[in-house]
Structure formats: C-alpha cells, structure tokens
Length: 171
Image (cartoon, rainbow, N blue to C red; front, side):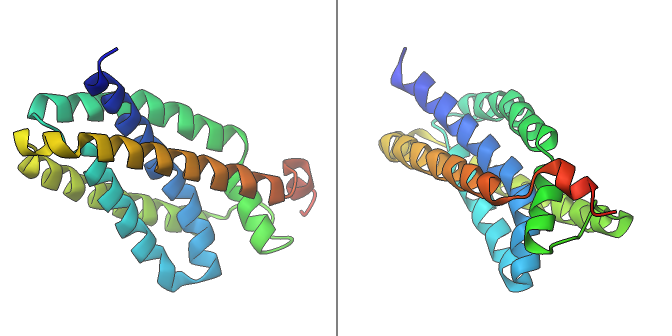
C-alpha cells in the first residue's frame, strides 16, 4: 500500500473520531465548565482542517468521503453504549435520562460543530496544493497520535461512567 493511501485512511479515521467524539465530549466539557466548550470545538475544527489538507482537491474529497463510514461506526459506538446519558449521570449523579431541553442544547452544539468543520473544509480546500506534500508525514504522525489519544480518553471515561441500567433506575 502506498504511503499516500495510508495517509488518507489515517486522516479520515482521525477526522471521524475527533469530530464524532466531540459531539459527546463537548457535552461533558460544557457541564464541567461552559467556558471551555467553544475553544474545544474550535480545536476540533482546526484538527479537522489539518487532516483534510491534501496535495490535490481529489485527495481532499477522498479523505472526506472515507471519513463518512468511519463516522458512522464511531457514532454507532457512542449510541449503543449510551455514552452521553451515562456521562451526564457521571457528572451529575441521579440526572436520569436526557430531557428535551438537553437534546436541543446538544443539537445546537452539533450545528455549531458542523459549521466549524465546514469552515475547516473550505480552508483546507483553499490551501490544498502540491506544497502540502512535504507535510504529509507530519500529518500522518499527528493523525495517529490524535486518533490514539481520543480512543484512550473515550475508553478511560467509559470506565468511569455508571452502568446504563443504573441510570434507568434513577426515575
């Protein structure tokens, strides 16, 4: 497999993991300290843009398209493990299940994240060129590091959360 192909896969997976986990981690960060939520989302958008930078527009599009199935699997993990609800009950004991207001707040954060990532995509599209070629190795190494870091953070937090059946018993 060529290095360019490996780089594309690494960047796509990193974009997926960082973006999908941001939907859920932003909720935890917002409850812990609301002042850190927007900076966290901005950092996610910058990483998203950095992973999208490519030698050509075609490769940029390929990275984005490949990130879609990775995002689906990542989102499915969070959904099936009830990550968000368990996180809320970890921070606020006895919280129970999410309310309509909490879901609306999460929807607003999701829209903000999508807008920021779209801005990152426009930036990456405007900056992608042959000059990027010399940064591809750094991009891959950074992508692997961020990918592993996000998996470690999510897995660690997962061990701290209450079990879902305990959350359901709060009502």
